[in-house]
Image (tube, rainbow, N blue to C red):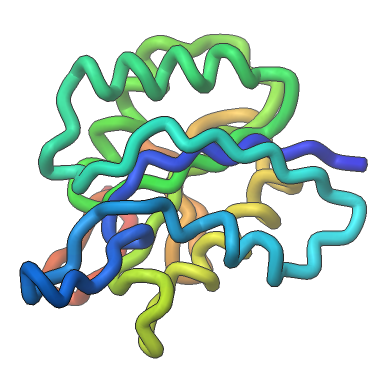
Length: 166
């Protein structure tokens, strides 16, 4: 049985529509119900809800909390759900602080929230679990059928996706 730790931090993947606000916002985590629908044989998913923030509101103190949560879970691969706007910054923060990894650490998210018909969230989450099982130790961004080393990627806002850097 392969164990994979999931740490949720919020971001678009977890946003819900608020009729009161007339906008999408981070409230309750939406990840766990989706995990129960996935067919992941021989995989144990251990979920930790760390925070539920828009990544534009993520601070260095929040990144420190993510780092500590990862450090406590280095016995297996880790998937971190995160907002796409500052996902790379958090990944680079982790890369600077963590050495000698034995398993991959994967950051993923969505451009459209889970629960919306056009959401890419479930695809990215599923691909992240696969990536966590097969990638070499390191820190990666996994989105839209691609796995990027965290120091070789940037977000292309115009095309709403991540792309390789030179």
